[in-house]
Amino acid sequence: MKRHHFLLSVATGLFALTAACSAQQPPPASSAQTKPGIAAPHLALWGDLKPVVSVKELMRDMLDPASDFIFDSVSTVTSKKGVVETFPRNDKDWEKVRFGAVTLAEGVYLLKIPRPFAPPGDNNNSDGPEPLEASPAEIQAKLERDPVLWNAKIEALRNVGLEVLEIVKKKDVDALWGAADDLDEACETCHLEYWYPGQKALLMKADKQLRGLYAGEKSKKLGMAPK
Ligand code: HEC
Image (tube, rainbow, N blue to C red; front, side, top):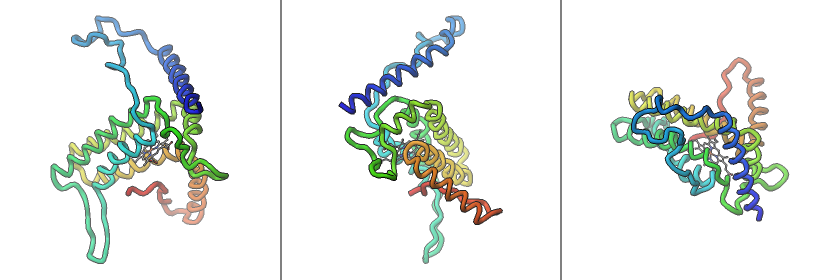
């Protein structure tokens, strides 16, 4: 029953969104302006988009593994045996980075399809007085209050995907390091907003204290370390 309400609110939200969007949309382009060969230019999509999994599962099974192609592509590990540097050395290595970039840039748009945030019965780590994670219902409510913010986070991750695609074309190892940082940030800023917002407050406090301690020094980014 609870789930029923949840889906209903997703549907209502979608309807409100669609209504708002179509109200703002300009009328379909006149046939004089349309490209030859495109029969129905006013159709935004070729067909329906139907979700298969929750946001949580999409993260676990698609966006997270895709990001590892990028995170794992560059590293420096210092051990007793010396320094081991990892970076793309040949076409096969760069191909993997491209798999990651394309899957992220295209796949992140699947977050625009209304879908449950977690599987049925999974309430995240949201119990207790200071829960680590927001519940699926809380995440849903936040999104409905401000869908523009959700979309901005999606675009931010998509932009990193596009950035990495350019890097792959140029085989620019130096730039790949920076892109891995950008990727970490794109994931984390969305998570801090929606998934574990309690930590955002904590991080801001810690960051402020660090800045106080190391005034003048560049404060280090406090994100989720890539695996
Ligand atoms: C637009 C927002 C957004 C972006 C961008 C985003 N995530 Fe998420 N992610 C979420 C939300 C919301 C959840 C929590 C869903 C839930 O548990 O209800 C989540 C959960 C997760 C989880 C937990 C899955 C599980 O099984 O518990 C992982 C792992 C994850 N994200 C990885 C990533 C990585 C890696 C990136 C970047 C490549 C990323 N996410 C980008 C919103 C986002």
